[in-house]
Structures are given as C-alpha cells and as structure tokens.
Image 1 (cartoon, rainbow, N blue to C red):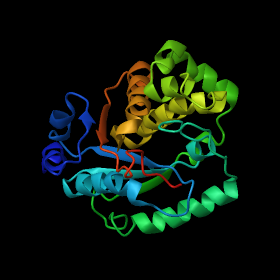
Image 2 (tube, rainbow, N blue to C red):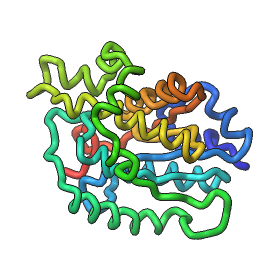
Image 3 (cartoon, rainbow, N blue to C red):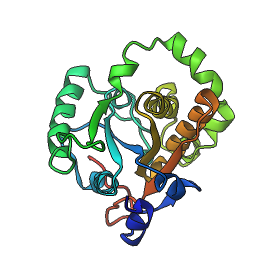
Length: 237
C-alpha cells in the first residue's frame, strides 16, 4: 500500500484535503470516486488532473470509481460559471458517456480480476426512478438552505457581479451530487470523493449527507484546476 496523499502532494496535484484522509487511506484498501460531467463526447485537458488522481489512487492499491454524471449532466454544475448551460437530452448524454468510457479505459484498469479494478458508474441509473417528492423528503430535509447558500458556487451566482441569477435547477445541483456520494458510500463502500478545487463545496455537502443520514465518516480531496492564460477554468467551451 503506497501513501497516496504523499504521492499526489509531491506531484503538485493536491489543493485541499479533509483532515484524517491520509490516515484513513493507510488503514487498508479504500474506494474513491471522481465525477465527470458528460456534456461533451470527449475528455479534455481540464479533466487531466482528475483522471491522474484516479490512476495514482489505483497504483497506490486502492479502488477507483469513475462516475459519469448522466443525471447531474442533465442539470448543469453552477461551479465556476456565470450562466446556466444548455441542458442535453438523454440520447446525447448516453452517446457522450460511452465515448468517455472508452477514453478512460486507456488509463484505468477496468478489466482485471484485481480487488482494486476500476469501475464505471452512472448516477442516472440510481436517480432516474427517484421522484421529486421522495428526494426532497428523504434528502432535502437534511441540508439547510443556509448551508447551501454558504457555498462559493452559489454565492458567486447570486452576487451583484453575476450576469444572471441561478435557477432552482442549478441550486439543487449540490444536493444531487451529495446524494451520489451517499449512494456510493452505501452501495460501493466509497469513503472519498475527489475533484477539482471548485468542487470542494459540492463534495463536502456529500460528506455531510453521509454523516447525517448514514452516520458514517467520508472524506474530501481536491486538486488544482488547469486554467487558461486569463486564469479562468479550462472547460469544454
């Protein structure tokens, strides 16, 4: 078992990490995931560090999960954005997911019989039959509006500097992503979510749901974003 935190730290791939994560990962093999938004049919340079995290996680003896956000991709993550994105239909999302899976297979071992073989999961599979009433009753009641409003991704979109406000659809994004973490914690024994530094608020909402609903302990780790010359996030556009 290699020290994953030590490995990504010297490589300059660590932006922030929840206290206790290093000790947790040194106990035994654990499971972590990175979410990838399937709003295009190809990975791009902005995904590089996240995919590298999964690769080094697997090389360190742990099990990586790549989550293709079929459900969250239908909503659109407000993090780092000033405008709401166009929503994609299910057929386009399915096409994008299959294309991304093929690219990820070039970096991660999905096919071996090893205990830490990578898995690809799609949050559409567990969100598609979740009714709105069930979601707000079973999940929404555990996170306050005050908590959600404190997140940078929300505050920036509601500030006077934003060109437009935030729809209810986007506002609920962090709850849906948080539920992904809870679902994977319960069904895949996943205790760590990793992502870009702009995802810290969404990830910690997931750790809160794990604590409040499942009574468990989950961890968060973020990496630096790859930015363009003007300092903004390198995205699909």
